[in-house]
Length: 498
View 1: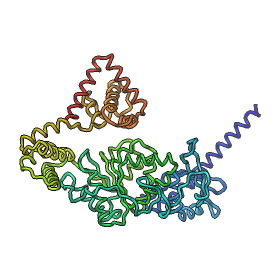
View 2: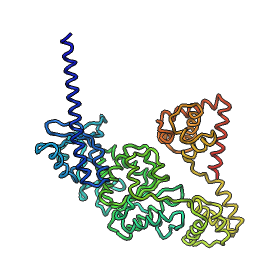
View 3: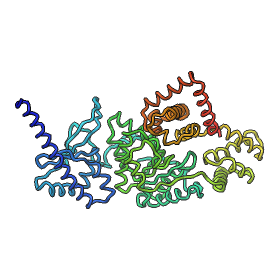
View 4: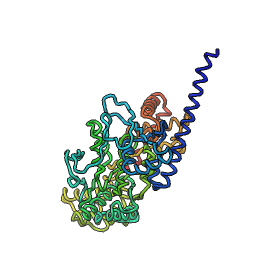
């Protein structure tokens, strides 16, 4: 019996030693963090030091885990002196620091692995995908044009017709326009970095984003400005992964002086794309480069976005674009008429402005449709013609339906609070409403199953698929349930058709 107790006793001793060792390296790192906190700004401390985890302490070597290769390189480039001094103060003259980095493999096996790095050995590694320091004279793949470029060769992808001059200012957009103009005069040098402009469809987000870029290029031609829709950014990243050229992708974006990303909400649920954008964002922001983003929602309402990204979006200014008031709508129409060389009676302009209230794109489209109809049929532009065209235009315009709106319609129909639908409760009436919201979101929006699941309380795509099948089966077997579907469909269609 005694022989059997020895291993148990040995295991206990070993476990006790491991616990003591863990306590030691955690204490050492805690002391280091106190020093770092006193020597760097709160923002830099939160960005670069808070995510680090101590792993072990052996032979006066403290091993820390950093979240990415980029963070390792940044620490080595900007904080190496502080790190060395602090480690030696805690561990003595022989104290050393070792990094442990969890990497995503780009090889055939696709398994994550860890590399260990003592300081300044990153370029000596042979088997790990290493991001070399940025060299503007090197050949870097341009995802927009061709391999081999210099900074000056980058096409800004801007629309020169979107300017501040033809962006009509009103109470609905004054803050966003003023902030955008301030940024264009001093990119990277204002407190509006990043500048996030958000608002509904057709309210001028893209126009304003382009206008900022166009103004910067006019005022400071040597600045490298790039406008890119978020879906193109994602596609470029996917292509870089397939071709094993992530370094080129990241370095290309790190070269920019001003980065404008349109519709940032489409990065929701794309974890790897968000990760690479996080590091690009940090690099640009730390080097006082300007970042401009647009979104259909305020940062607080963006779902499926990593918390660390959302917190960075709030570093600068978030400015909303609201529905234009009547005076602004009339001013927009008159500006469009002036640019297109059109003359219309005041009563017709007023009628268009009264009829279309919440989408500038539709407002301008209605104006062009009326003029085109009159020209093609060789008819004078009268108020009667305008009424006929507006009635057809509004009736035939299918408004975009969002997941959020579908959820609101479903919750209103069943008299449930929205928070309950997004909760984890398994009550039958809530589960039924949640499944209906998923069903309509799949059929009436272009969102992926994963994105729908995120909006419905963090469910996965399999749950959404199961919900859609369940709704389909119940419609065939349960008349009462089918009436629910029909009634909700009618309510959604009312909004969709005008």
